[in-house]
Amino acid sequence: TFFEIQNSADFKEVVQGIQSALKSSNDDRNGKWFTFMGGDRDDADYFVSTPFSKFADLDKDEDGVWQVYEKVNGKKKADELRAKFRSSVVDVWSYIYTLNKDLSN
Image (tube, rainbow, N blue to C red; front, side, top):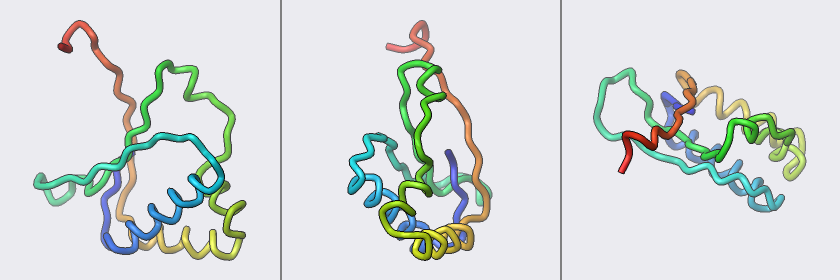
């Protein structure tokens, strides 16, 4: 998932809060966060990548990150963090990439 940001400090605070909630709830999601350098002004600033070994893993029934955060920190804090997220983000979009083993080393 790609994120175009207007307030990087707030966005980082949101991501750190969610990551902390996931860790404290022993959630084993292994998303990796990346920062872009350079590119067009309308490009993403950050993206998170979560590898799956098969498409069926995408259908796993689990709480979303906001639900996990709310269970750990309560509804009031979850609503506050979600508002901070919304005000820090300009746009969010996603792609699914698949490994092409025939073209890879």
